[in-house]
Image (tube, rainbow, N blue to C red):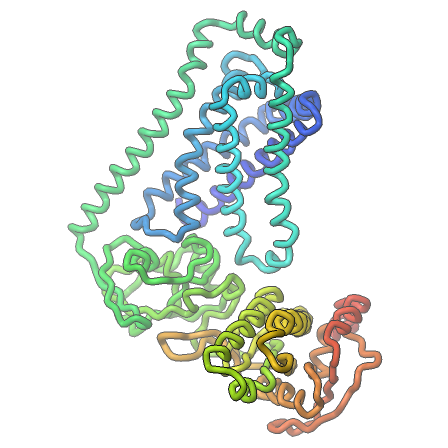
Length: 570
């Protein structure tokens, strides 16, 4: 089974389990109203999951997901993982211990004895013993956290995910909270039930009439599952130990890490990422080393050996970011001899970096560019002590960084008291222009907040000048080997810088080229328009002076993206 097949099976089985879990928690949440409400939905769900097709689907998903956990544990040459990876792995090992008892008492009872437990019976049994209540709440916390981490790191590098976070995060908290409250309310109600309640009597009668041999088999089911799990875990650990000894006998090689200048000893069979983690060297891998996000990509320097060809999963990922022939994924490449690598992303790069081009040589692309500059920074240095200036500038850049993250902008260069940001690196110029304008609004809003926070520290409010333009540029990985970054250069980048400088002349916070506004879908109404001659450009350029950037958003929402040039042509 190759990496791509393993990924698909893990994702598919995980999503099926997540669907089952969400329905299960919604059902538990009905306990806020009554036990009878839980029973009504529970009976419907039991009928749905008891058909041959859905039962086979669910049992296969659970078996595959647990089995793939053992496969993943065996495949990893190193267990030095990021905190989120370790947390998810630890919960994956702990969950079966809690889950087997629940499975044996519910699905086991139905499959082995033919006795169906509705929610009234299950909740009453759990609340009859304090340990059952604690176990159930712990199971809820672990399984929901494990699922949420998995889904978050699956979606984190996908385009548009950041826009859904304000919706998904509340849902992520509300659903388990409702389930926990529903279980509490239903449990308190179950403690008040008389012994002759119909559901409890029916269950006792069914159990009294059950085959004693099958009852004994059910009693041993939990222990049998735990023993099977423990033996599988022990087997995997033994196989890992045997493989480690074999790898040491086969010898190793060295990885030269250019940013640190260190030579890292590596064992044959382990990935570059595993070697870096064992050495304690930070290296970006947003997807956890599963070959999906491409943020772990490295440039191979002076390659003089035949390397393993990338498999289908790695090939597709590299093609997505237009990687050159000497670029590989650190989480997938397993060299056999000494090799020199240079990371292509910073160790703390965020998810949008996964979509940036990986080629060392630049390529031409249409993008939107934004230059931001802090006004009066020289005067600020004259008025404040150096420590205070550094503090204020750090707060300023924190706000810029958050504004870029919120609008899918990519920080390209830093120039002391300003920066250059790129938008539309995914190839969607219209969206890039809209996001750049949203970024300008975010920056202005955050500057107003920052001025309020620092009111006692500033003699006058901080102001910024922002220039936005779009067009062809050369985009690629640039900079020294120890700190490369994705940036852009060309005439349109220089023009954007000139527009930012013009904000001083026009005494405004934002100047946008008319072409960028047009691509963003903005239909100009009353904003001042000027024609300027920009140094470095032969033809004049139409610009729009914007005093209140938020007004642009209102007009764009009214006209919509169909008003862009492409939309009008269609």
